[in-house]
Image 1 (cartoon, rainbow over the protein chains, first blue to last red):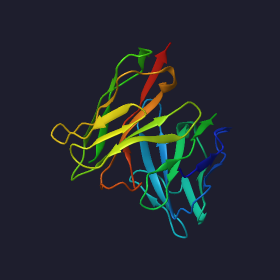
Image 2 (image 1 turned 180 degrees about the vertical axis):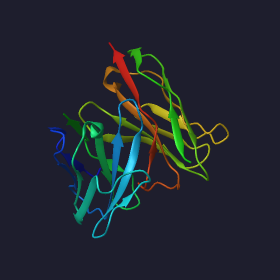
Image 3 (image 1 turned 135 degrees about the vertical axis):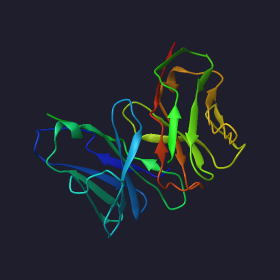
Image 4 (image 1 turned 135 degrees about the horizontal axis):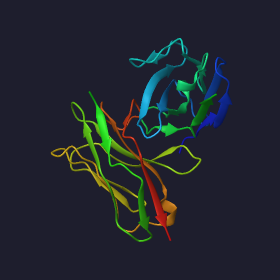
Length: 114
Length: 115
C-alpha cells in the first residue's frame, strides 16, 4: 500500500515556542492531506484539510492562526503549532491517499508542551 | 451531526478467546464504514471496510457487518492472537464510497491479548 511518513514521532517543547510537524507521501502524489488530533481517551478529530497550492480548510472551532498548514508540494504538508501552550499537548496524525483509494496514515506525532 | 460511539476499553483477553468490539454510528445518508488498527509505534492501518448495508468486511480473521437497521458495525474475531494486541478504531466516511475523504472516528479501543 501507499506510504505516508510523519516526522517527528515525539516532540517536547517549551510553552510559547512553535513546533513544525511534517507529513510526506513517499510513493504517490497527494493534492489533499488531512490533519487529525487526538486527546487522551477521545476520538481522532479532523482539524483541517490541507490542499496543495491553496489555503487549508479548517474545521469549525480550529484556530487557523494557531495551527498553520502549508502544502507547498504534492508530497509534503506541514502543520505548525504556533506559540504552543500545554493545552496544545496532544497526538497529531495526518492521512492521505491516491485519489479514490483508502486513507493511509502517518505514524502520528506526540506533542508535549511544558 | 456525524458521530461514532465505540465500546470503551481496555479489553483484555486470553489467546484464542472470542473478540467483539461494538461500534455504532450516527450519520445522515449512507456512510461507508471502516475499522482501522494501530499497532504500537505505527500509524493507523485499514483493517476492513463496508460501503453498503449488509456488506461484510473481512481481513486477517476479523469481520464486521454493515447493519443499517441498528446503525452498527461491530468488529469480531473468533480466536485472537497475541499479535492482535493493538488499538482499534471504528470510523465512518459520511459521504459514502471508498475514497479516503474526511473520516469521523470513534475513540479507539485498546486490546491486549495474553498468551
